[in-house]
Image (cartoon, rainbow, N blue to C red; front, side):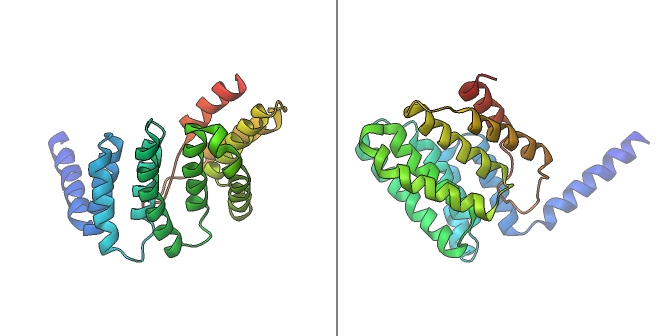
Length: 209
């Protein structure tokens, strides 16, 4: 009986795989590469997918996101600028396809944050106002998107800490994002999803809880 059950499960899985479109296979592979920290391969695959899916914002969004996250570890300013310029081009493409998209908006803010993290004295004032506007716009569009709530709260905490202001109100927003993450349901269309671990870590590191 167990062998029959195993065979049925295997057949269902095989049918699922063969039923995937080339786009679905490509995106699954690219996201797998991303999870394995094979960032160069992931970005290249996302870019190839984007050329075939010209009306789909997700491949360029993910390619940009991988590059932006990598940017936090780059120590040479010339390399960082070239790296983020590439990410910006990809993000601009995604934004042209899907305007007023809160996921893209907060990713733009994250790109700006890489510059600030690299050199706060040089880039802090340049991007402070812009990021405030970006997060406010994203929150207006999607007030219960946990990634939007968390991103805005973390940015606000950074600003409050810099100016010696209370951070407690923003810690409440991190807690709210955690509850929103817990309620969020996964999707099967490769849309951005998740972030609970990051929110819990932010609460611990930035709020001491």
